[in-house]
Every structure is written in C-alpha cells, then in structure tokens.
Length: 245
Image (cartoon, rainbow, N blue to C red):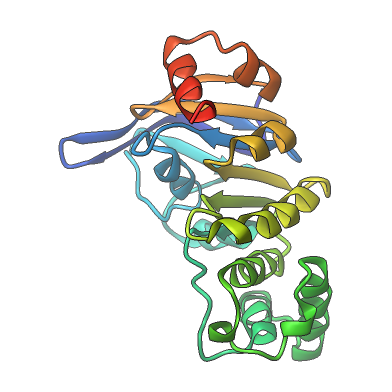
C-alpha cells in the first residue's frame, strides 16, 4: 500500500551516529498514527524528515501526496500541505494571537486580510481560544499558546499534520486541554502523525501505533494490539516500564 505519506529506506546520520536505519512507512489519508518509544529512538527525527526540517540520506525517498520531499520548488509545495506543531510553541511574540494565525495564509497562499481574519476566528473558536484573539502570546498560558500553534498550523488547510511531542513542554494541568483539541482534530479526517509520550492518548485516538527504538520501527499495529499484546520483547519492556510507572 502507498499512502499520502510514503517513506522508503529513510536513513539519517549525525556524523557516525545513525539516527534512522532504513525506515519504510506508508501513512494512509485520514489515518492517525502515534509514534512512541524511548527518548533518542529517532521519533522526532523521523517526522522532521517528512517536511525536510532534517536532511536525510540521498538514497532515501519521501513523498507527500506524490510530491518528492527534496530541495527545490517542490519543497515549498510539500510544506504548504504539511502543518507542524512543535514542543515549543514558536509563536511570533510581536503579533496578536489572531495575526499569528493569519500570517502564513496571507504570505504563502495570497489570502486576503479579511478572509485570513475570518478563517483565523473560525479556527480559534475551534481550538477554544477565540476570546484571546487580540492578546499577545506572552499573556497566554502554555496550553493556550499550544492551542494557538495548532490553529496556526491548520490555517494553511494542510493535508497532513505533524505533532512533535506537543505536550512535553506543558505543565501537567495544561496537557489535557491540548490533547482534547487533538482528539477533536483526529475526528475530522485530517492525516495526523503524532510523536507522543501520552500513552492514553495514543491508545484512545490512534488508528495505528508505531513503536521505535534505536532508529528503527520495531513494531506497528492497532493500539489494542500494541498496548495489550505486543509481540516484540523491546516493545514489551518499554511499555511495562512506562505503563507501570
């Protein structure tokens, strides 16, 4: 099967350290995939390669909706189709919440100011933060800022959303509000690839869970199988450590 995201022989090295060791992966349109595993297993590197925030080996190929992810004009096209939400919110501090959400559609897609403002308001309502639209990011909590970051990524109407541990920088009481927004989003049919330590979220929302360790996909399957009946010893060890913590 090939999908909206197709990855073949993905290799990435930092000097002599091989971070990704020949990964093959297809993500179907509308699929929600959660990537779990220990720190340093290559999870974030994997999703950062999808929109080429990380370069990768020349023999590796990634396509998004049939477009090769490679330097040149095609890359701008891919990045317009792929939204990304990071651990840190990366909002522009000198712009209001609404202007943060408006900026990319106006710059990249040529959307008019009025249309971008209307779309921003719709999205801010969707992530439950419309009442903060005229504030600057510094006046928002971490959870609120991350919800703005999600709205900003959605403003480009991406085909694929990448989340790189979106709750790991948040205080525990703010994690839930961001996961709730992501759960709602998962129900809308957008393709989502989520690197997460939130096992409950992965179990509840994912169509498929990938367990990574040592730069490889060790095991993949439906959440029920991965969490209740993993076949690989490394998966079993990781989950017993995490779930019994």
